[in-house]
Image 1: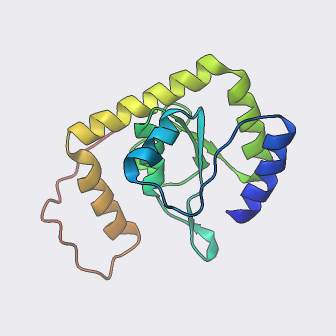
Image 2: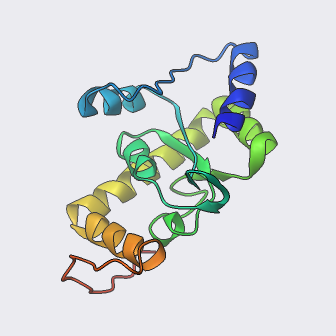
Image 3: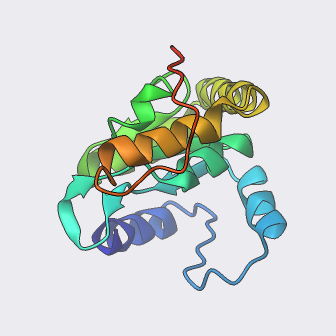
Length: 161
């Protein structure tokens, strides 16, 4: 994550793009979401901390989309269980792809807004249907915590795409 940020910041500053970064995590949740609400592109990584070759679905993906911001995130299989890349969010592979997509979506406002709105609509549908957290819980236990007992009694499978 730090390597991507160290590449991204000079690019952003060189192109005179306003940005906000808070690694202190000292904002209350509403203030945190309001920042995304005012943001054109929300950046996220899906690395498992300490393991550069492992990825996992992060709640930040859903927070960014729920605020109506375009999600630009590393490709992640688990996210694709709920969202469609290129329709609801934009995935990237590596530093160059990340910078190219920042540049592209800042220059193509209609396309950025269309994807951001689709992601927001999808999140609202999932949230309102109680689907989101039930399925996120199921995905975490399926992909990341198979040895831990699940507290979830609801194992109904729902097709989302």
